Image (cartoon, rainbow, N blue to C red):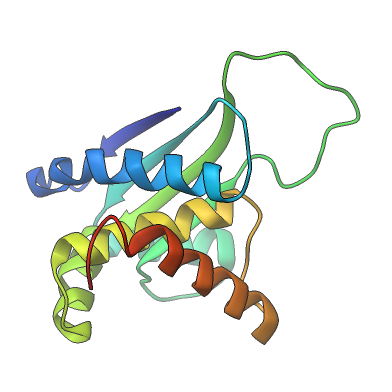
Length: 151
């Protein structure tokens, strides 16, 4: 399991969450019984950059907190043996970490971990487009996060 951290936002505070992210990633894989050696990238960006990404790839003309791009959306017709399975990229808005932590009354650490967990679940195929999907995904987020970082 590997997490590649890219700090486009030049915000040094994000590095303190890497160990938490590793725990979240590992717990998600175990909880979902995914015995795969996988990796992902987490890219920290400014509100302006995530706005551009949201507009370009999702046709939504506003900033957001987290966007995930899964590489494993569909199974290939054949298998390629690889050492690690690349799941995709998670873009996290560094300003949203601070703003939403304040808004929801919890720590920046909890919010940073929540956004990463949310992104990982998207990379693993979960979504929240329907009430049932939302209930399942949000329940998984709580199961993964609550032992790692308190509300």
